[in-house]
Image 1 (tube, rainbow, N blue to C red):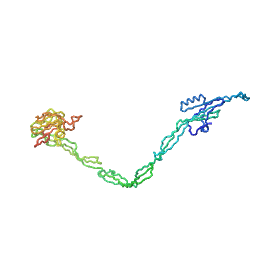
Image 2: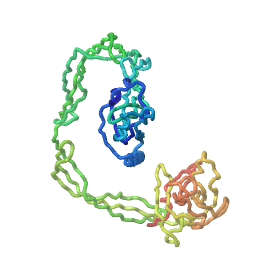
Image 3: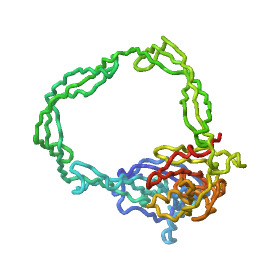
Length: 491
């Protein structure tokens, strides 16, 4: 007789048979107390091995897997019971000649790994929304090893025993059923009764004929209704009309250009300029070196008149309709040759072993002086004899006094009452009250005071030049005049 348990699914099964001959003696067998309580197992495939093969098989199975098979084999040969001498009869004398009967006992051990399916348990939760299902715990199937020992006597089942070993505990799944009621409210807008917009056209003479653009985008009118909607667990349960407003349509405005695409006009231009020449005349009635403009020079040119065609404001073609040539006008400058006391340049010019430095800024209403591009550290000279009436180093005046802009400077008053100013010096070589003569060095060119560009650590010589002024007395005050009227001419 064989049994199996229907409550477990079959995963693995192994059966080993051992058989031994046993004597026909009484053999004590182990059996279940109540065979009816063990469910019958499905038939297993049977394999018969020898005793030595069985133990080799057990050893190999133990090495290859965590599942082990334990086999208990009992084989006993039991001699026939001995009858006492007092009971010897004719029958017993016959049995002595009969062949002894042998009782064969064998044990079959079956191991099976079965799965214990997990169950699902439901719990109610007030922390989750009603109607939702949330997995709290994942289910895991259990594993049980079932070992069945069956004892046979001469192929007849005499005893069946079964043991179960839990390999993996079953873990039941737990699912939470939400019971929480979540109520929310929100405002929602709906539009109804759409009123179409109209299109209006305007005209613009600043735009071309083929141009049009939308000034105002049209919008349909409509009725806007606002509702307060109540939800329970994301499901609408009620709505209430809060407000209803009517919005008028906005007409679409399209602007269309009216300006002609093609236009024409005439234009007169001066081309091919011809520079005028300069001629000098000398006048001995003028002080030596003074210059006087007699005739202003005018450049010559070619005057052309064009007929120009434009397409959308861009020139597309031009045609000459007239042309004439205008000759240049010669410039005439009168230079005075009258000499009283010789004037020097405020630096050593080429005639005195130096260099004819250029004027970097001319005399004007906003700049009542001449600026010369004298190199840094070059000698600065008195234009004629006189007495030093001012000689200051940079820093003597504060920035709220206009005189600070001169930096280190010298003022000489000449015998005819004219005064000459030499500013932005690197250093001075004269002092107040000292008498100097024309051409004498009174200091050296620099960039002190306010110059542009201002010197920096990376460019310490920036702004170097000589700021030169001449002032003449008119009544009780001095007036600044153009120094070119007094300085000798040089080129």
